[in-house]
Amino acid sequence: MQVVYTPAHLAHDIIVETFMGLPIPANEVAERAEKIRAALEADGGFPFAEPSEHGEGPITAIHDPGLVRFLEVAWSELRRQGLPRPFLTADTYPNRQMFEGMSAEAVAALVREPEQAAGRAGYWGFDSAAPLVAGTYLAARAAVDVALTTVELVLGGATMAYGLCRPPGHHAARSMYGGYCFFNNAAIAAEAIVRATGERVAILDVDYHHGNGSQQIFWRRGDVRYVSIHAHPDRAYPYFLGREDETGEGPGAGENLNLPLRGGATNDEYLVAVDRALDAIAAVPGSVIVVSLGFDTYGLDPIGDFALTTDVYHEVGRRTAGTGRRLVILQEGGYHRPSLGENARAWLRGAEGRPFDPLPAAGFGERGAVAG
Ligand code: Q9C
Ligand code: ZN
Image (cartoon, rainbow, N blue to C red; front, side, top):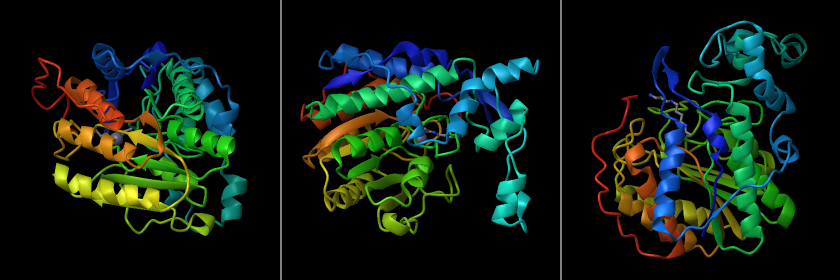
C-alpha cells in the first residue's frame, strides 16, 4: 500500500514536555515518524507519496476557527510578549468549576479568550503535555494534508493507504488541543469521506489512549461511528472520558463505543476487544474505516501499560482488513522508538495479507525513555 509522508513534521521539533509540573524528555518526538519511515522504506513494499495541500476548509469543517487562529499565531504572540520560553504551555486552564453558579448565558457573555499567550493556551488547550513550538502550526497543517491525501488515495480506488501523520490528532476536540494533538487528523479525514461519498464512516481507534477529541466531535452525529479500544480512564490519560457508558446522544445515540481495558492487557484480551469493535463496525453500512493507529499499546511503551507484542499488530491489521472495507490508516501515538518501525510494518503487512518477517537485528532493548 501507499504511504503518505512529508518531512514537514520535523518543524514540530519537541525536546521537552511537562508532566505533572516537571520537565521530562519529550515522548512525542520527530524520531518517531522517522523510525516508521525508515522501516517502511527498508521493507520495500511501501511506495511513498507526498501530501498535497488542502487548505483550511477541511479543518474548519471540524474545528473552531478560533482554535486554528490561536495555533497559527501562538508562537509569534509568545515571542511578541518577550517570553524566552523553549515552548508554550498554559498558565491557567478554565476548569469548569471556575464558573460554578454562573448561567450558560452568563459564561458565554462574560468569559472570553484572553490576550496573553499563557492564558490563550489555557483557553484552547486542555493539558500541559502538548508543548507548542515555532514550527508546530505548519507541521500540524501538514499532518492534516497527509490525512486528506490518504483519503484521496482510497477514494481514488486503493483498498487501503497509510498516512504517517505527525503530530497525532485524536485528543484534539472541536475547540481544544492537547495530548500531543493539535488538529484531529482522523476526524477531518472521516468528515471528508462523509462529504465525498454520502456514506456512513466508522473510526476504529486502537491507540492506547481514549480518543476524547474524536468522541467529542462525533458525539451527536449519526453518520460517523466512533469505536475505541483503550486503557481505562480510571487509571490512564485522558482520565475524564473513555468509559463504556459513553454511547452518544441525539442522532449519535448508540454510535459511540468505548472498550476500556485493564492494565497488563494481553494479546488475547486485546483480540477479543478487536472482534467486538469490528462487529460494531460491521453492523452499520459504509465502505470505509478510518483507523486511528497507535502503538503505545506495545508492552515496552514508556507511557502505556498493556502487554502487546509485535505479532498482535499483524493480526489486528489482518482482522481489520478482513471486514472487506477500505482502510484509511492514520498514525496516532506510540512512544517506544526502537519498536515503532517493526510494529507499523507488522500491522500494515497484516492488513495487506502479507506475512510478517521480522527484520534481522530487531532486538528492541529495554523499556524506552521515560517512566510516565
Ligand atoms: N508520563 C497520544 O498518544 N500524558 N497522546 C503523558 C507521560 C499525555 C498521549 C504522560 C499522553 C498523550 C496521541
Ligand atoms: Zn496514545
